[in-house]
Image (cartoon, rainbow over all chains, first blue to last red; front, side, top):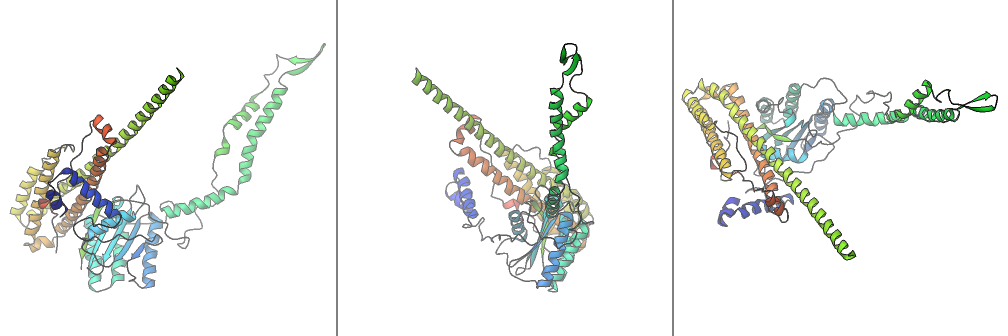
Length: 303
Length: 192
């Protein structure tokens, strides 16, 4: 449709560049549609949960259960798997819209791109799985299709949304194989660990003070020594400097100087708090998306 | 004498300012150019991915629909001879797009025909391949979109004044887009 307009204007390349540019600009303002037909708006994401509902559909305990599974997986592996329940497609294709939503929300950590979106379209009875670059080798397109065909579609045909979601999640988890809760994998867990060790940093300030004192003491000692570098020797004519004597500093002094110069003051100190204390899921919720990218992998299907 | 020195100083300042601005613009253009190259290599990647799926597809289909498999094989053999595409060359891009379009048509014809072979449709391997083809077509769409955005960013920056001065000085030309008249480029619709 747009290209018809362009050919109407004589196929000038100026128009070919200007029209999409203007439309894209308008699109970013949400005014004009991107393509010939109406586009569904990508919603702003509420950053505190991994389950999104365009309209409240699940009952609260099911919602909580699904959310907990996803959160636990996120803390264990850092993969940000999101379930999104949309209503209508409004003329878009499931995978096209899912791709836009994924790009806008930025699932998965930046660089790792370990995000996954399962988008249900309840009115149109479609579902799309969009996989981030980082998970593509594990959750292949063929596997996504299998999840849809075997886990989602049969349950949705029976009308059981909750069961569909749970069996899909389980199938995906098994495929990704998240074993032990490793606190360094998930960004939220790492942030927590960071906070705890920073607290640990404040406690052994005494040790830090000690390390700061050594250089200071060394400097004082050096000054003291240098003042008496020239040993006073009692000669017949009285006290006079002994030039042939010691240099004014010896091995001990060298060590002290080296200690002063080595800048041991700069080292950060990890307290003895380690990883204990936040193994349970109660400590804090979901920390937000990392801005990962998806290449359009995944699958879609309908019931 | 003094006013001459002042004038000289101002001139020198302006010159230095102009040069550093020019360098800045040049570097920005280089960055955008690299962005285009990068997104193009992604486009080539996903088209190659589709090409790589075909031998497996042919092997699977051969057991059920020998003739169709061989037809696809012939099409692929001709289209697969796509060398490195120079993306600054509009002709090369058109040719590349045409070849890929023919491959798309062949694939969609194969999918249509396979509807008539229920045994083939039930084959798990075939279903996996269909899913992978669908995924790859999605990927092609996404990467092409990103490529188009990269080219748009580059082209608009080059054409705007005063950056256009630097661009023509460096002999940077506008890059071609994919042709939007995509009749032959429709993704093979896979529906059960």
